[in-house]
Length: 301
Length: 213
Image 1 (cartoon, rainbow over the protein chains, first blue to last red):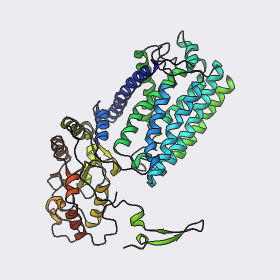
Image 2: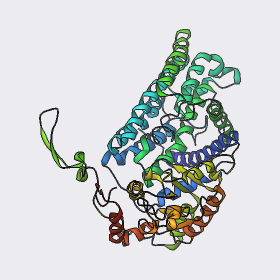
Image 3: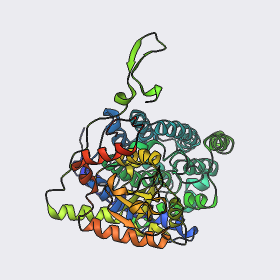
Image 4: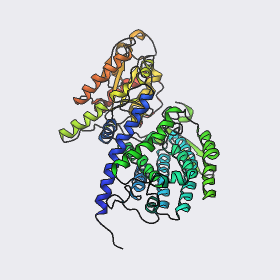
């Protein structure tokens, strides 16, 4: 097997761009949320300061091996998700480590971080963490269901499991995007997208007003900083998949930034307009509204 | 000492008997140690800058002053624009605001929360009650001087101070931290015996380990 070593620095460059973009975009979205509430909100660079502060704390305590590995799993989930799909279509530099069956791997990586978090939070021994993780896994599992159905539908439609091939099939104009050729699959996937972005109405797991902050209750200093880094990467990585599968991919960085911003805005827009669901309500909501759409899309394909 | 905190033998559902000692099993008893600053001054300065610009407050209202902290999150005062945020868990918080009078019962919880916070950590005493007891100066169940029990970095005087005073206090706190004077956690570790003796003097039903993480 021949491997192009130059791919490694290229991938790191992708990662660097995405981390910084994710940090700024996250703060920007928080600012938009604050403006809706008539506040000024955090400064745009606040996420960087928080990160340095958390890495700079002098003491940290551990609860065991899995407690260490929780944030590491989570971060590797985000990084893996990002690196195994092509970020920029048609670019040798930024197609990263994508290969023929990467769609399946991406589906797996979406779930990987949550599982790692569940193990880590369980070892922290805090009852709030255990409750938070139970809620989180329930919600993520049901919100993944319509997404998985949509992905199968898209794979059937294009007869391939390679993200690159799926993007290639959508080139040549807006009318070839999956969102127009297979609208039901995209609808199901976008509903699932709302559930996995950890914004209202589906953020009961992490919301500080509920069971205090859920899974990361016991996490602090560098552990928390690792998770913050992942919170910058993971939404972008997830949006990259959505962009590639449903919205025609991105042929260059400016298009990439624009599309990621717009897709992110969908969840922000829904989030600021709607109050929070309880977990059993959101599960019912996904099963009633999103899953039938996914099944319908598979039947129609 | 409460009954459920005593050392005892418990029979598990699988028939195995094992010893349970809640005070030892669930807590670490290692005393706090003095944590040195980073070796290189410029690194420590950068950390101090970050600590000053990202103050995470423990959302624990101890007295009547807690009502003054809530408006800071609202559009009128909006402390978020100064990098001040609220965290629901002591593990992630850096700043502990003792808001007003502190009864001895609450002091116990305040100590436990303070000790769970990570170094460096800061304490602000809000209102006159934390300075000299304020209007509760002759009360039998409140403490008079907060500084005897926890290392206070900054006092905000008044009964009660307005939210604007708190915002001004945050700015002063930032100056202290940036100058490298926010070393309350190390002070606590250095004078640990003195603080513990003071705490035990007022808390009569001491049913926790001396240092609980």
